[in-house]
Image 1: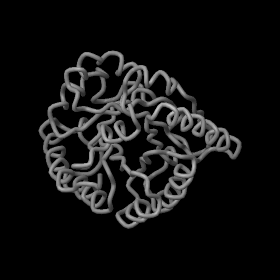
Image 2 (image 1 turned 90 degrees about the vertical axis):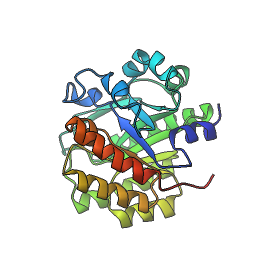
Image 3 (image 1 turned 180 degrees about the vertical axis):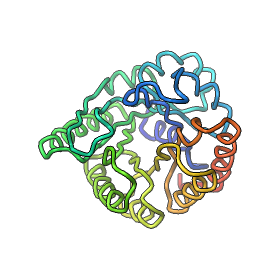
Image 4 (image 1 turned 45 degrees about the horizontal axis):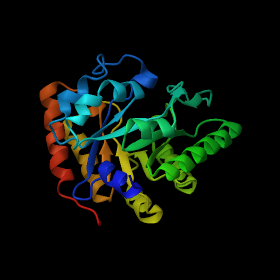
Length: 260
């Protein structure tokens, strides 16, 4: 399979992608909405969702399901990080599987966190680790989704500015897709224009009402983002409200397209 094939599976050209992350158990243990880790797939497969962000265990448990739903892409999370709730740089990041294994499992892309509120030596080690993953991804023609993030930080303007800087480092390390928390429409547009790498925007934790969520996603798409990574803002809501959010987001994502 080629890189172009997998990129188009992950980020279609005729619309913006809606990738639903359900990999939270790697760092959050048991959380509301994921008590049964494989439940969201059947629950949301026949909606506007274009794919899922998953753990190795979920990929293995749902092989038959996704064989029967080939229109859905699968993005495999290949790392974990502890502790996500602190700002003191005391966390620890490690890979939990390999790019070789991801290719063997037949997923469309792999995803890594790229935390930056860590020590200088840990930053160097993180960059080296990402570099090795990028090399393996290029060898196997499978995209890496890299997520610059200030772990445990509130969504302040200063944090958005810092994550924008780290997104540029992600580009220089060779990320094929960059996942970032929404930094505002203007900054998103600037990153899209300057980096020339597909940008996808994280929906974050359950927050705000439906109107606020949909408005932020509308800004994201106007700025040129290729997709939305939205999970808790859908599956942690009451079912009818989650369906409403997803329907409105789906309408927005179908109003945009991207050059072939």
